[in-house]
Length: 132
Image (tube, rainbow, N blue to C red; front, side, top):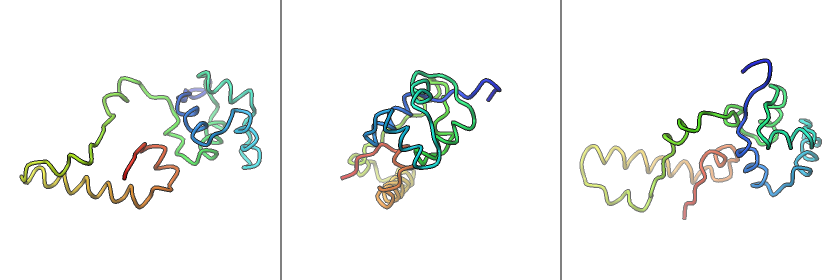
């Protein structure tokens, strides 16, 4: 982070805003009532990809109830290599070996934790999951 500001991912901000079904103007209003005011013009600049101050980064973090690190723009190449999809329905088809038993156990534990925390906004901003 430099004196010029922090690069945040404008797509994440837009997705979080749309998830709450808010226009930029309504989000600015909401920020006022939650004591972390962000002006409409600042929100427009943020969604265009402009750098933000540490103060604005913290306000966004508070407003969306996510860790500030989640909002920071990271190298897209690295992000793409770390995206994983779990096909829950296929887990039970794994061979009955020690290696797969351990993986099965970890996946079941993760699935249980996700089920238990479906209402957690911070988790839902990280895990875009659909569990039946």
